[in-house]
Length: 250
Ligand code: ADP
Ligand code: MG
Ligand code: MG
Image 1 (cartoon, helix red, strand yellow):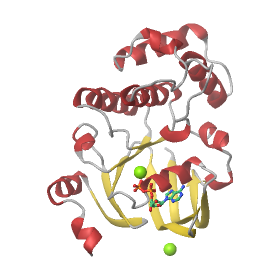
Image 2 (cartoon, rainbow, N blue to C red):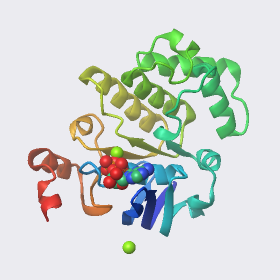
Image 3 (spheres, rainbow, N blue to C red):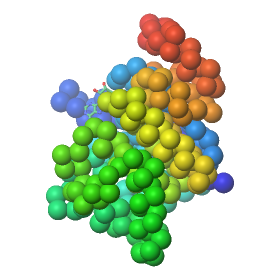
């Protein structure tokens, strides 16, 4: 059992207009095996939460803490966070010239496990995960994110997640820009990873449609930098019907 705790998190970002507080006291506990969805209007700070967990240098924590099994995540470098078992899909969104998907995955796996994976099982694991995600085998020879379509980027994220076997995964808007077929394949990948590897999921989304495929145990409505309401999967159904107006106008 692992536990990710976010306590009274306040985060600022420096903008041209000065320092702006974006997160205003976020409290959230995720245990391994649980799926949490964070839903909220655009601009409410959802990605800021994801970037802060990832350790993005643009975001300054002014109050509060993030603990992974009691360890201070905010003291960890980005690499240390990955080794501690945090998977943040937006961690490597950039193109990495000259680095193939195959090398990238193996390097990441080696860094996280502290040793290189045994070649035979690794090749089998990669192939199995790619087949599941309906990815062509030539994909591994391409350079990371170079010319990837939106759908390929998402599949690559889920492929990493399946192979790296994190304790906690944060997926930010994994559903945006996916057609229904790709959404299903990506969701199945998340569900498979969850079954084979008891991990905690933080799924950030603006829309409810991905929640038809990935059933959250908890739904948190995020408004103006904090959680405004929490509930179970039924809360997502209500948001689908009513939207965010009642929160934004309140
Ligand atoms: P969401 O993901 O919910 O749409 P974001 O976390 O992306 O929200 O943004 C929340 C607010 O913080 C927005 O007003 C956005 O303009 C601002 N913000 C976020 N990141 C930055 C940044 N790096 N520089 C300036 N403003 C930012
Ligand atoms: Mg506070
Ligand atoms: Mg966002």
